[in-house]
Length: 503
Image (tube, rainbow, N blue to C red; front, side, top):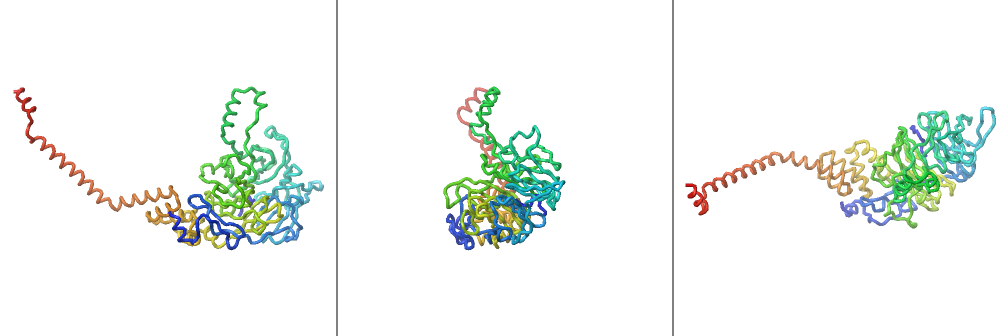
C-alpha cells in the first residue's frame, strides 16, 4: 500500500507504425513473460513494456534474515519502507534504496514499562499527520498505535458497542486519514471498513460493497416482505463481499479493492467521505478482459491490493494472475506487468501487497518471500509524460509525446485519443475525427465532428445564404407563374355550363 495520506482506424495503420502483428503476444526483450495491453476492440495485443523487473530482494539481502510470508508493504513520508513479515511476527523497516534493513519492530512498551509483541501481523500504516505507526496485529485481535520509540499510544480491540455485531475482531489492513480517523479491514466483516475516531471510539462502517441484484436476491427481498420473523431467521442471507484492501490519497479519498466481489463495480472503488463510489459511472473493467491471452486456463481477476501513487495513478495487484494493472486517474489502462513464473518479474500464486516510489513499483510475494522491484522503462516514461500533460489539460503539449508513443507502439489506444484531443484543440477537426475513429472513441469523434460542422458552416456561411435566397426566389417565381397560368388557362366545358346556369 502506498504512503496513505501521501506527502508526498484500421489495423494496418498500427502495423505501419509498429511493425508488429496484432493479436499475437510476444515476449518482451527485457521481460520473461508476455507483455500485452488492449487495443481499441478490447483485444489483447502485444505491447511495449512500461516497466521491467530489476531485482527481487529477500530478507537476507537486506541483512535482517529471511522473510516468512510478507503480507504488506508501506512507504512513509521519508521514503522508508515497512515490510510486514507475518510469519516472523515483526515489521522490518527498509531504507529508500531497498538495500538495507534499518530497524525491526517486534517489541512494544506500555506506559508501565511492560512489553508486548506481535502475532501474525498483516498490515501497517505510518501517518505523517499523527506521527504514529499503526499495525494490524491480526493474531492478537488488535490494532496497535505506537510512537517512533515503540511506546504504545493506543490499542484498538473489539468494540463494546451495539453497532458492532461480529463475534470476532481480526484487523488485517489499516489506513488513517488526516484527522486521525482509523479505518480497519476486518476478517469476516462484510459491512465495510470499521471506522474509529482519533480517540479509538468505534464510529461504524465505511465503504460497504453492494449485493448483486440477481433473480435470487430479488426473490428473497419480496419473500422477506411477507415472511414472519422466524421464517426470516431460518432463511439464508445474501450478503456483500467484504473489502480486501485499501489505500488513501492526499485528498482523503479511500480506494478499495475486493478480491471475491460478486459485482464488477465493487472490484475497485474510489469512495468519498460520504461513502459514495465515484467510479460507479466509469465505463471501465479493472483487471483482465475476457480476450486476455494467458498461459493458464480461464480465471477471474481477484484484486488483493491497491496503491495510489504520488501522481494519482492506480496500481492494482491481481492475486490470480500475479499481474499489476496500472491505470491513470480516470481509469484508463496504462500498463500490465508481472505474471506467475519462477523468473524475476514473475510471482507465485500468493502476491500480497504493492507499493510505489517515483518510477518504481514494489510487489511482495508471500511464497517466494521476496519483494520484486519494477523500474520504469523509457517507453513507460514517455507514456507517463503524455498522460500527465493530457490529464492536466495540456493537450497540445502532449501531442509530441503521444506521437512518439505511436512510433514505438501503434497498438496503444490512448495515444490515438490523446492525439485526437490535441488536434481538436488546434482546430484540426478532420485530423481529430480521423484519430478518434482509429481509437474507436465515439465521444471524441462526436466532439470533433461538431467542431468540423461548425467550422464548415462558418466558412461557407455566405454561400449557404446565397443558396437559400436563390431557392426561396425560385419557389416564389414558380408559385406566381403557376398562379398566372391557372388564371389565364381556357375554361373547360363544365366551367362554361356553370357560368351559363348562373346567368
